[in-house]
Length: 421
Image (cartoon, rainbow, N blue to C red; front, side, top):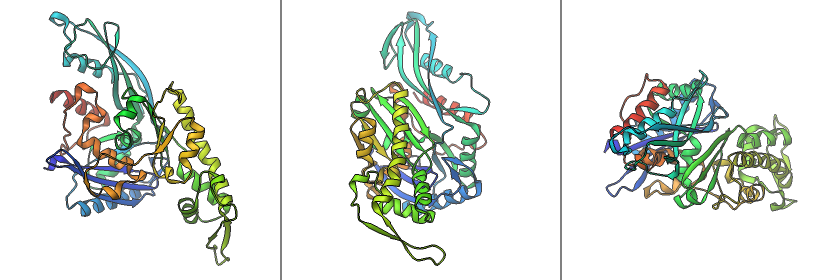
């Protein structure tokens, strides 16, 4: 039973969210516990204060433990930040077996070869995701094992990040008293929770608007085609309100969440909001229309940058049949989906975690929990991040990986995929 319980932790710029989930006898996923803590130790998705981050991690995980009635030993963590980069690579191996039949060991050699790409000393590979295989020039192959051929190639999506950024996440979690079982790019984790397989097959763009970063992932033909992390997000909106309306940051955040709108035309022009004065000064009255005039330009900027990232992936709105899905706390600002549809030029909806059977489902059916829930879904069903020929592997949730480098952890993880085939 212990191996069926997974804890995911989303260490964000504004909040740390811990989610504990498990599978039941029918292989359904239940949410056992949820914990939230205010995050003050990160800036744009990167750890800038170890002690404050450690404290927030402890608080969030302990709260999830109390709700779930279990003890968490290891967690699966998310990683974001504008240091994350992705690129496409191609690798090739020859088949020298008798009858030239492709074996799983050949696929392993092929995938291993992609991890040997030249990288600067300060960067590490976070993910290597196969997109398609090519056998003797025949492309579009999803499952090469068992086929005959002399030459096996693969197009893969390689995600890299700063060594120091990943190490600081590991360090904070381990200083909080927990082991790190795996680390997952946050837009990929969010996609597991809010996208369905039909959307991924038709083509869809996921835009996760968090506090410090906006994460983008593009899927087509059930495969991730592009990932990016943008350093403009919800906190930028809050800062604009704070500076533009001259209010405290806490008041600015409250105004954004309770009265904000991403569309000026959607609010009543003469509606007035009262804000407490500062330093004994009288209360201020702010027009809701003026508030929206501050919010809309920044939301437009975020969505325009996301649109440019989607275009840079080679996919336009007409190629993404399922349009776009917004998630994260920033998607909760009224009018955001309508504004996104206009700017992106495609149908847009707000995505909430799905695919859960019971437990605290109502508590996590919220865009803010997309990454945390996605990390749990990945931990319980790792094939979400593997290609078809890797289905069926199980997470080694209680293996102590402390003391290993990120590259060693990735090598151990990939080795376990093939050891269990």
